[in-house]
Length: 260
Ligand SMILES: [Ca+2]
Ligand SMILES: [Ca+2]
Ligand SMILES: [Ca+2]
Image (tube, rainbow, N blue to C red; front, side, top):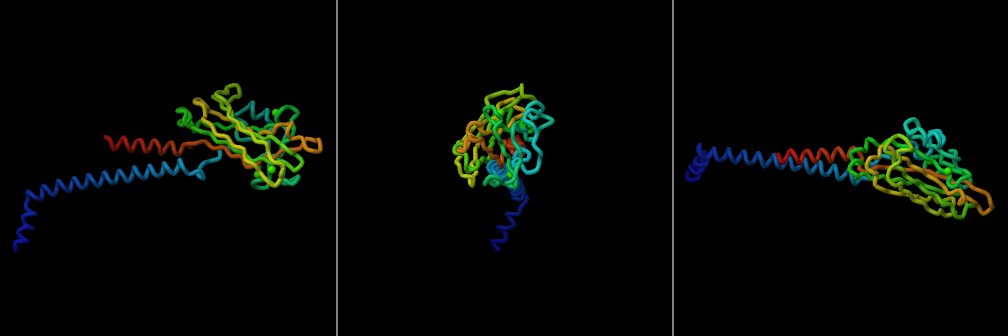
């Protein structure tokens, strides 16, 4: 009986009000917990977007030289919008396996030959305005890599890559300092070697140009003749991608909403 009256006391009108306040506090706590879970979820998704390399898009079109016809370096260099996503080359063709070299990826590869100058080059331009949010704060990084190989008659081919930045859709608008990397290749046709470079995209960049090249002189074989150099599996990515920038904005909005 004593316990029953204790229960009745607990349920008296005054106590009910206290319980209702405490219920509201509980609801508030639940809301906060829910907001925290949403924030944690957004943070997790953001971390995922930033940390998962597999999710990054290759901004190059036909990076493995499998499907598209080549065009001229001149066209690509003088008309960015029309030839965007097209490989423009000086002296090069797309070939299948030859001279003991098998494509690194797919069934075709780029075969570059001496252009009679200093380097034999291939170019591709990309409109990067969709990455503008990150580029405008100087927080966008470009990573370019490609694989290179020569036949067994070439003892010390020098292969390289290059990225140039532009503030408009023309070669004359070049800004910042190009980034580049090169490598002296082995003479084993069974091995493909990767050359890669990373760098910050200069603020104001709206177009960039990816380049693969061979030093002409280095293609000289032990037979005294100039040999071809091969390229395959090019890859260019920009970090962060627009999706993760969107998530960053979303996370920022959630934090602001919570503070209000
Ligand atoms: Ca290929
Ligand atoms: Ca050249
Ligand atoms: Ca090799």
